[in-house]
Length: 135
Picture 1 (cartoon, rainbow, N blue to C red):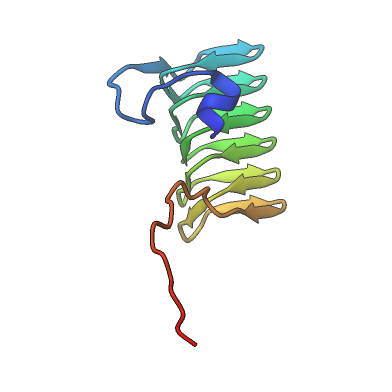
Picture 2: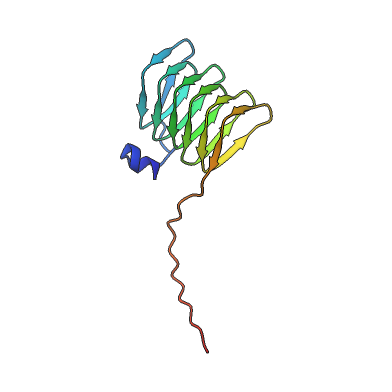
C-alpha cells in the first residue's frame, strides 16, 4: 500500500541489493527520497521517504519524519515514524516521536517517548468458499 501510494514504485521491498550509504560525519540538511534501501550513519535534518528498508546505525540521527517499508534503528530519531511493515528498535535506539507500524520489535534498553499505533495489515485474500445451509 505505502510503496504504490506514496512512491509509485513496483519494487518488492528489501529485495534489491542497492543501498544508499550516508557515512558518519555526513550531515544532510533537507528532505531525502529514495527507491533503494538506506543505511544512515550520519545525520539528516529533514524528512526521509524510502520505498525500502532504512537502517539507522548507532551514530545515525534523524531530525525529521521517517516514512518507509521496514526500519531498523540503533541510533537516534526526533520525529514521527510511519513504517509499513516491521520496525525494530535496537537496545541503543533513542526515539522521540509517534510511531505507526504494523509490526514492532523493541529490544531491552531502547528508549521510546511518544505514542504508538499498531495497525493490521491489509489482506488481499479472497474467500472462494460457498456455504450451503439445509433447513
